[in-house]
Image 1 (cartoon, rainbow, N blue to C red):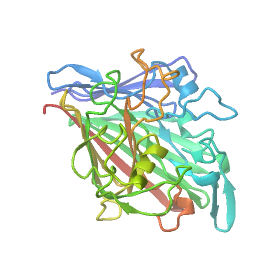
Image 2: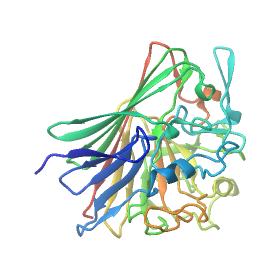
Image 3: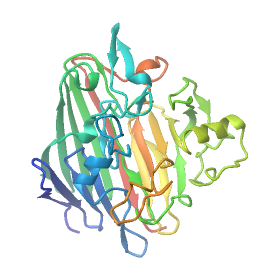
Length: 373
């Protein structure tokens, strides 16, 4: 069995390269140091035929044009964040406003009335400083970014290091750490979209999803959590047993009007699940997805308390032309974002996202891929 390898190639933009991590099982991961974007993950199926199981674009220019959310200074954006590291605050902050130590802070809004994934120019649009390394059983790409005090309205100079590692067990591991010069709020994640049948295969309706969560956080009309934590039992949000993603997306589901209204507000699923965590920070099973047609399976472990499941209900076929030249239509892929809860800075009852000066932020997630079923 050979050792994993890592190589890089320039992308024609100063300071940006595409890094290729490969193992002996035919799993190949390509990552830009622009935005920390996972551009592709090639994985064989049960017959040994490889396919790219992540949604994305064929060029860096398309990521720059379409990945960010549209706003006054970036009208081309689609707000899809394919494969990117997002921050300083992943997910939504109501009105882009929060108060910390009696001081009010404003993050530029870029998602209706809300700030999404760090504001108009988040971590997904930054060039990260890369360092590669190889060991006997894995290879790593370490990415560093220094966010200045006041960037996107957030207090404190935030030093962030994100490390992607690939081993011969088909585990893609992501470790993120950060420190700040002043008290601030931090919520970071990766925003890869998965389609285990292959990124150009169409809707993911028949793929099975399990989420290790007995509760979720419903949202209001602006897609901000109401503050309630509600059980998933007897709702379309119950993925405590493997369930087809498309089962309740076609309308007319046999659930309460309130539950169906939650789906209607988000064009399907775009909600935070409260993971069944038994200890504060250890890695735990968060979710498992399976494509029965190919046998490809994804298992996610995380140290985070929440999981945002987004089923791609708002994709625009007019603009989202993927790597294979195919239009990404509604539900062409799903995101499983390991993170803290949305709008936590304004919700004291939620797990805190505050990071104090002198403290260290750290989170880990493992994306375990396999085939053969």
